[in-house]
Length: 338
Image 1 (cartoon, rainbow, N blue to C red):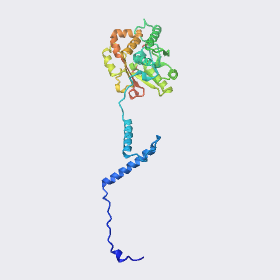
Image 2 (image 1 turned 180 degrees about the horizontal axis):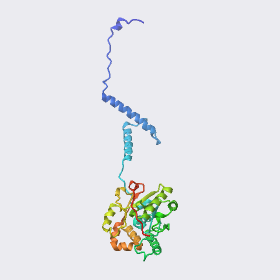
Image 3 (image 1 turned 120 degrees about the horizontal axis):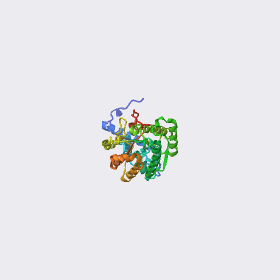
Image 4 (image 1 turned 90 degrees about the vertical axis):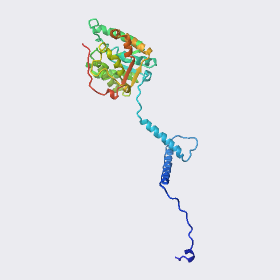
């Protein structure tokens, strides 16, 4: 190797400008820009919407930020537990099937629902387990055979007032629901449910609303039948609210049908799946339907007056069968005398 000459050894060094000091802010900015660039590429790769015009190679940082912010907001909003709001229009319930124990159960608990649904052009089908032939305090005047025949006519007139044209009578003796062969009755109800294909089924809850054994048994039958053939169908249990109880309490002695501990229920509005406040027209029809069942209603109206009856039953409330408020718990029960 040739040794350097003296001239080269004494050459003047030309100063080279050094880069500006790298600060923490600079590093953070560069990292942010790189991160945004990578995120922009990922977003672009995930786009599946076809466009007629060519896309820009890389979306702007602001555009990507805005898109990400919207996506994050939408994701967060989907996790927010919005307040539950019950259905307040019977038209939204679709085809309705009601399953009840005795004539007048359907009118008291769902007369307004049925009338409003029919007015909206919805199909409504009613099932009644018994004719309520033991529903009297004067069996000498109203022996079971006679009362059963009369209550059948009353039920027909009541349903007609509500616009309900489809009815199934199971023909079970009043007060004996709990002694019937369960599987046979459940299969029969399952067949009706399968044929009707309802969007909504309404019936009693496990409490039976009043604690009546027939009511509680019908609830169990209907729940089992629905689970067997229509598990995705909306199943609703009739209930009472704090508002109802406060209005009813002064007349407890005259209308004491809630004969089991813990009843009537004071279901909070926040737990209701359906809460109908009947307008005057629908309420009038409901009262006509109730009055049609004169063997049951004449004495009640005479005792408390029609205005109070209208007040009590001007709302109809239901909870979802799968709600926590209807969870398993022991309920008292009572049955009519044989």
